[in-house]
Length: 312
Image 1 (cartoon, rainbow, N blue to C red):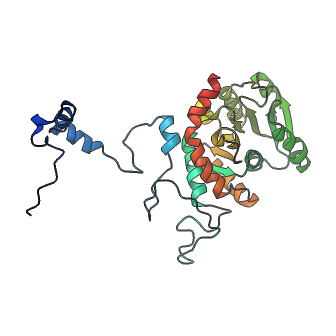
Image 2: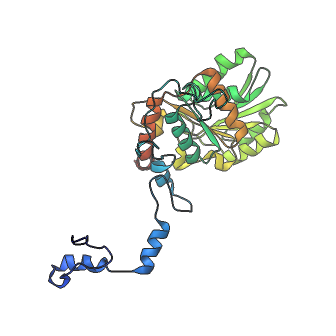
Image 3: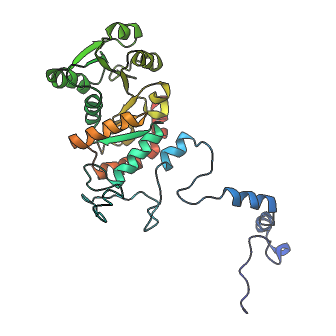
């Protein structure tokens, strides 16, 4: 071709000596550095992929579970408002993972994947409110005749649901001060299936020993669920301290802008995750795709907001 080649990044432009000092410095930086160039190529990534090794929480808050949309290449997770999804055949039913948005929805799945990774869990289920998450966690772990040891300082809706909704269904609840783990140990019964803690507790911010309480649950074959809404994974991840499930009212800090309600149960293993997802499907209380989409965005700044609010 008679056309002049496009200037190469691997060599300084011609007449470099006549360039202004600032441009001359830039030209020199563009000079060949074979080792550095090879290293850059070796770790180069594209959208949706990451270099090997652990990532920081601040990075995960922004990027985890965010993958380019295959057809358009859109980087931002799309909002899928579809109720139903086409199936290629009876034999390939649910091969794509979606059939009806009461069960699964691509936008909701992205949020649930993000929640599970941020909380170091196996899986997550996202709900329309924090209370929907709480009642689903109890429904997944208890039945008539079962007993739960629960903190005497908890969110009012949690206390009310145990006393006025689950108790008439034949479940038993013992409310005790969780600041002293001996109170929990003394309250355990042969039919205790669940220990329900909340830390920091709403509204007085009392704390409890997650690891010690988890040990008590394990000794008695019970599950330990922790409402860690006020902590968020920025401050504490209960699954790292032996808990079986963690509850988040997404309305509070994950959303944090007074626009959307939401809740989540994040489970440490497949057994718990499958139980909660089954309850979510039966109860039909899955989060709507629109608030799921919004919380995917607002959660990106949660680390900054929680740290600033804690320092205030």
